[in-house]
Length: 126
Length: 206
Image 1 (cartoon, each protein chain N blue to C red):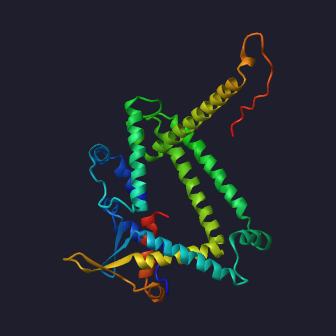
Image 2: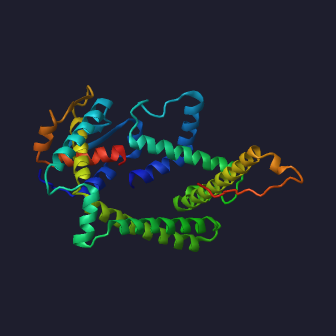
Image 3: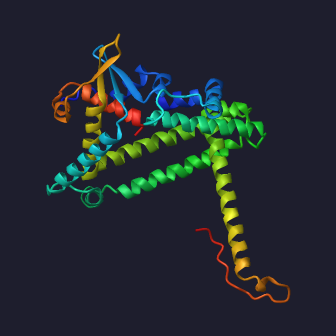
């Protein structure tokens, strides 16, 4: 099995999820070295974070997530792609709301009743 | 240096000889060569800086030779002379990435019980991924002779030379550098430099 698949299998296991949690809460060392982390160690940390977030989503009973899905790499990737798209959509929506709020603050009088003046608003995302 | 094993064979051998569980413990990549223990360790800051200097020096030296080309010019020449459009190949890779995303978004909606549909999409994604890998290998092959890539090869070879150690005393856990210097690495005609370079590539996950 190639190294990346092995790292992924380890990261989703109960053993390493528990060790990861313990490393954050109790300062237990995951690695012998605490600096000059190798690419392999960094990749492993990334997978640990990803699977931790997936188990959190499962605990919160979010849509489209299941234990079986987490264990299957392909289905897990499908859920991660969906989650990324949702987050991107939410972020863009937040940005547009923020822009609207800033325009209202800059032109407060124009938003009072009976005093509406049409202004050009560019809500296109950057 | 005489290449006795292909790059892919070396990568496969490194994949099968070491377990990931051993690789995460430390920032080293151990391997066995001719029944002896070796390891490649992560480079320190000084070695990374030296490797960067070697990259720049190699780049400058190569640019003085008229036949050598920077990547930008190589892309142009490939298109005009060999009718190889690297930009189009890269666009094909992007198209595959979009198709993979579409497959994954469709796959996300499937329930646990829809095993056949899941398997079909999985196979589709694997085929696309394999095609994508072929394209990226093809692009890398065409661009390998560029000055930047040749300089990068020199950079990584230097790191493999300074970061490879051999176990000289198992009981005492004593390790020593394999090559005295970069020249010694370059003159080594065995497969060991390639194994070391392969291990370094895996360690860095480049």
